[in-house]
Amino acid sequence: MNNKIFFYGRVSSKDQNEGRQLTVASELGIDERDVFIDKQSGKDFSRSQYQVLKNALREGDLLVIKSIDRLGRNYNMIIDEWRDITKNIKADIKVLDMPLLDTTQDKELLGTVISDVVLQLLSYMAEQERTFIKQRQREGINIMPIVDGKRISTKTNRAMGRPRVEKPDNFDEVVARWKKEEITARQAMNELNLKTNTFYSMVNDK
Image (cartoon, rainbow, N blue to C red; front, side, top):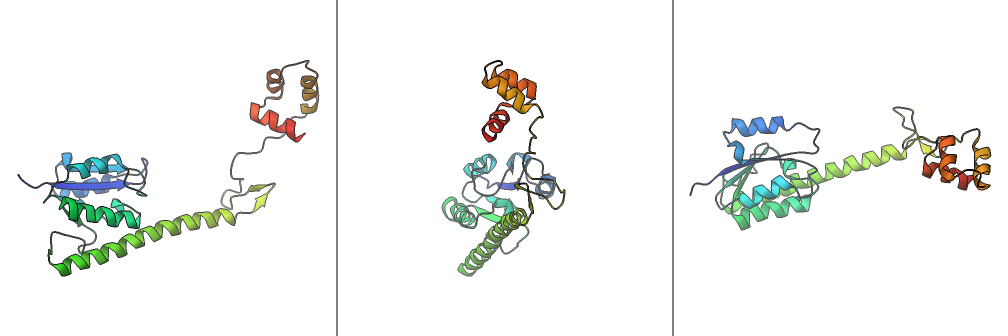
């Protein structure tokens, strides 16, 4: 039985273009049927195409990935997956952007140790970058000025979240009629042009 070459690619969302990774797979001559692409976060390995690919891998097969962060972004999970594929399934992995991460090149102990060290370093760096991005996003939100109880974006000068609905001029009059049961709550909302949650929120704040 001939060993197969698979290609795995990933983009973080459906809006991103996987074209560059598909081009790489095509240039390597990998059959389209053996190319698997996921369009979702790399936080874990619960991805449909990755799971199909992994179930297809057999001993002696080769999994090609453009860069280590396309495999995933969680340090511990990347290490576990790498070991599962190379030790348990006994397939090879080749990361194109990092020649040292190529289990087909050197089967000696030294080559294995070097690959493991490089993998752990790169995986750690990928996870740290993800952590730094989240931290910068939090810090960006925290330093935004607060006006009328809402954080204001320094880029757009707009409040984050839903805009506050102003109380209609005839609010008190309509609510008074509602409380006297002259009109229903639905009629009151229609007259005030307010949604249910907003109406009762204003009533409670009154």
